[in-house]
Image 1 (cartoon, rainbow, N blue to C red):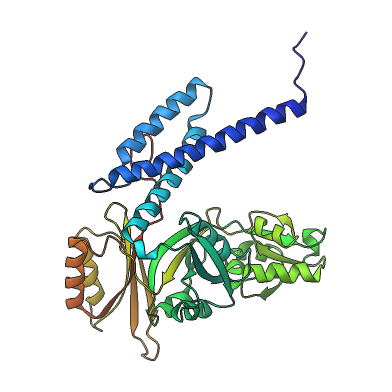
Image 2 (image 1 turned 30 degrees about the vertical axis):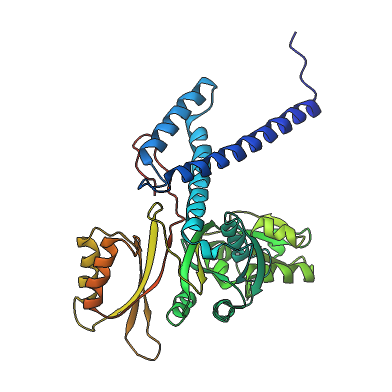
Length: 394
């Protein structure tokens, strides 16, 4: 004879109670992470301590094994918790470093209506800033830049590159001419789904609505559908709105599942992107540059032009190598009005106020025709620590 099973409703009630306890414990842990940040003020200790994180993960894996929990499961959960802790500490320290930027509310421009990926990135980025956000949607990247430059909004959120479709050239071209500074970044996982307004099946779909970027990022799936008409919209949110209004069985939108729910859309198919790991990096721009505390990792974005002679770019890159400055991104774009002349965009890991970066700027200034700092800002790319080696995982 076996023990009687617990009633399903009782099981769910116990799970709900445990979930509530977990949420409360996570909130307590987050508050303690801020206390850790406070303890580092006035010291040279950085926010991240890889050796400490490795020891923490190893201890938790061992503890989990006592409770029959898989080590990978424990590691995945605490990588997320550690990332949250690091980002909250960075946000707290940055507010202390830039007290003038602390406001009870800020106005933020982004591409598309509510539910667009830019809107999701905006909410994710400012959720840690302890400020109320007034959301201002725009129909183009240029409109975002213009609104911030004119003071109509305080910040603008712009997608800059995607792991599948590459750099977003229109944004790079706009950065050539703006007076704005890059003050932050955030990387958002892009989870493309096929969304419809009515019950239908895949074979019935003959028209797809979305922004050009998702069309490009899902090109392999679209090719598999055969003769599909691709309609371009100014954002994924606008595409979802069109599909929601038309309510036809032969049309669908590409977008995020949670955003589709805002428009009453249902998921017809998930995971339609070319790459499993599909991420978009967004930058945050403002009229005033920020100072980055030396306690947090910084990234600096530069734009420069070199002489039109062999080896000019190589000489500039050697400056970074000789000073042991890691270059995270190199992008070239044509100079408007000057045929065959290129501007180079560089993302480097370093604080512009550090002695090393100041030396690099002096050397690069001598080697380039023009050079400009587009922004120095906290790096939001929190790479997880490998519990076995202690190295950061790319």
